[in-house]
Amino acid sequence: MTNQTKYHVKLPDGRQFGPADMTMLVAWAKEGRIPQDAMLVPDDGREPFAAAEEDAIKAHILAPPTVASGIVQNKEEEGPAIIPYKNPAALVGYYISICSCIPALGIILGPAAIILGIKGLITVKKHPLKKGTVHAWISIIFGIIGIGVTIMVTIVFYRLR
Image (cartoon, rainbow, N blue to C red):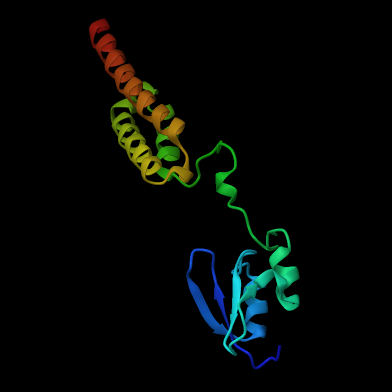
């Protein structure tokens, strides 16, 4: 086999690609683009033969699959997030809802907490990796409680007068 010979790679399903010289075939084999059961069809008229029989690419075709180093895993997919810093609506709504339980502030902060909680839930639905479902629900629930506490304290205050 000379370096000038070109080959087509014939896949088991009948598809064929090429022509390519041996240097290109070695590169394809390293990339995993030539399966073990592929055939090499030389352009010089010789009979097709199994790609795994060609010494130059044999080691690459028969090697077990490897994982390239330098692949960075997505840290966002690991475990639950305690603080949903990528969902500011849920986070800010959570803190506002806690403050809305202070009687006079509930009438203003309660609705804001509810709106931010709903926005936080919408964000989680659109982008699940952003987290914050629990913070958003706490924001909504405590916002409602804050409004209720403010209304009750106001009623009691006016009745005692």
